Length: 497
Image (cartoon, rainbow, N blue to C red; front, side):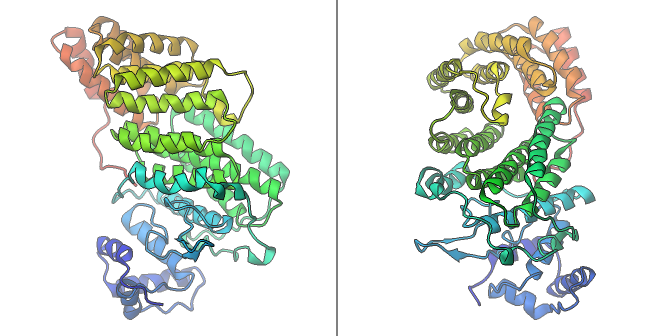
């Protein structure tokens, strides 16, 4: 069925440099290698995909996604190629059902398949070391708008609707065809789900200690396996827990991707996490995933986008929300205000965060919330006031106070957070005209940065380096800045996959 030119496919095809005949031959060759000898793609078919918007039959879209991913060096899904399998909802709206997009998924089956496809492509890039063309980071409003409707409305209440009967589960190898991996995940039991839940805590601990670079591939691989499991029918209670694992892993994959500078990939994982949380009927988890996306936006200098995301995160986080969860959300919102120089809003919002945290009853709460402890509260306050101090100098002493509190409270295993505390303290000292105090913390940060597999630490170190520049006339500052320049990694092509 023709639906007009497929501009998405045409734009990506133009980037590859292939001719239509070359692409046709590559599709047939890849299909034959995967046991699909019946493929007979030719130049005219490629032309119809582009000019008439025709959608080829399976497995061709998956083969194309794999070929484009390899060629462009970034994740390209069938939806990116314009091959959405649109379905009609009861209200007449058409939705793509892709959890990597900003449209709500229509059903768990499609969400699981698309999750598996995206992670599979990401793994392929990891295995082959492909880094290439970039994609644009979506605006906060573009994500928040569609998500707001179903996070706050009646649609959320539908909860888990099941993956389908045994006859509806995916064909063996179908989703795996794109990356040449024919392992077919099967149904799981309670023991396996509990083991998966425990593995998430292990991954979080690794990330907190050394950053996201070293274990990102392992987390994406685990998420890929869980996505495969979710394409099978499971009892409702077990399926909810499995979707909860998927949400936790997607947040972690997003955070690790952000940590190493893969920004659009990180954003798509955060959106996937929200969709997975929906299937798990876990609104607080969805809100926390959005708060991560908001933190990414502030880090990249887009605080207005961050606030768009935070409004949805807070309005749809569910009732009752644990005070500590609300406190965490407030700190992210405050950081966005601080980066805009809105001093009054920053101070008010941080005050609300402190009040909410003080209401914490010690109730255990979900495992992901345990990482937001009192040290993390002070750490976020330090970062926020340090950011505000560039607009309002009176915030610098407050940044120093909270940074010291965070440093004193940090426990073992939170090496990256402690490094950020050092950087907040050193930066605050420079902003408070105390370069002599800044030097000690700056050097502790510098010595720790080389131990991290985290691009964010270098980004923060560059910010501190910039602030130290106003004291270049001091010999110790001049020497420190020279050491930072020497330690800084060499410029590389942007890894915005």
